[in-house]
Every structure is written in C-alpha cells, then in structure tokens.
Image 1: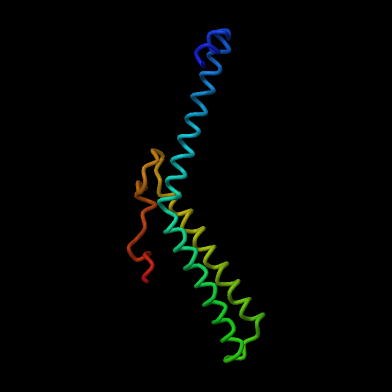
Image 2: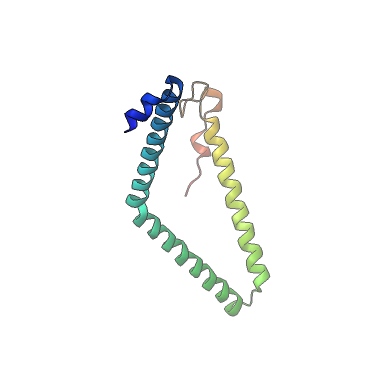
Length: 126
C-alpha cells in the first residue's frame, strides 16, 4: 500500500516522505534508548531521591535541635546554612574554572604549561 502511494506521488514528494520517515524512525530510536536508560537507572534514581529526602529530614531535625537545645534562633540557623551553601557554591565555581584552565589549546585534559602547574604544597589536605 505504501509503495502504491509513493508511486502516485511525484519524485520530490516521495523523496521528502522517505526522508521524513527516516527522521521519525531515528527519533523513535533515540526516544527508545532514553526510555531504556531510565528503566535501567530508575532504581538508582529512586535511591538517590530517597537519600536526599532523608538528608532533608536530618537537616530539619538538627535545625530544630539547635533552636531547642542550644537556644539558637531560627534566623541564625538559616543564615549559617545560607552562608555555608554560598561558600560551597563558590568553591565549586573555583574548581570548575581550574578544570577549564587545565585543558590545553588541543583540548586534552591535564595538559598545562610549565608556568601554570601547581605546586604539591597547593594541594588541599582533607
């Protein structure tokens, strides 16, 4: 039936429909791959979401404990958390900029010039 329809169309229309058909098949293939990825990784995603919720509950409980046991007011707790988050965000940005600079003009990671190499003393001890 498709061949009959294609025969009745002009060559341009036929070529356009075949191109669109290939494009749609490719899109379906890509979406199928994405779906397979999500199906395969859903347990991991669920576990991470569960851990995040547990951390949120723990932080909330610790905030309440600070307010009740230590006499710290809720505004101070929020200010401390906001400051810590801002500091962490800043450190991540600095790390990202350093990683970006470690790429040479050829784009290979870790290829730096001699003048930009870090001293072992600069390494942060954990």
